[in-house]
Image 1 (cartoon, rainbow, N blue to C red):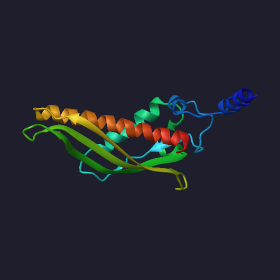
Image 2 (image 1 turned 120 degrees about the vertical axis):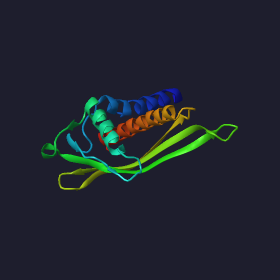
Image 3 (image 1 turned 45 degrees about the horizontal axis):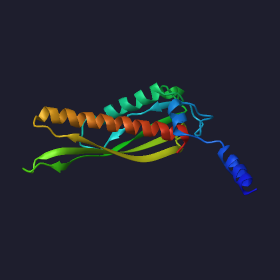
Length: 171
């Protein structure tokens, strides 16, 4: 009898509807939690010392939203909501050193604040996000710069993914 009750209990628990981020990544959502479809992405304000970072991030966001289902990027007049924000922190640090005290591994980090507002200006969603990535410091300054740039591009991609996923699931 105990086994039967345990089986029934497990059966009931396992039959519940669940949501997975995999569904959001594929654009298979039962409904839009924020109730919007058309979005206009504004250029984020750059409060960092890294010139051009706002354009790189805009490109990452546009790519993310265009390659996924769930939202349509439109011009300002057709938008139901506006995604904007700020790049608030950019930092490059050394995290591993050689015997001669030279940097062997660096870390680049980026902090952003993203806000989604409806046409009336009401905040629908807001998040502060942080990402970091390590990169190899080479003997060649140009190779190190390329490694750091690649790390930054991976950060921008992850931040764009996190914003998209946050909007699609409403969290």
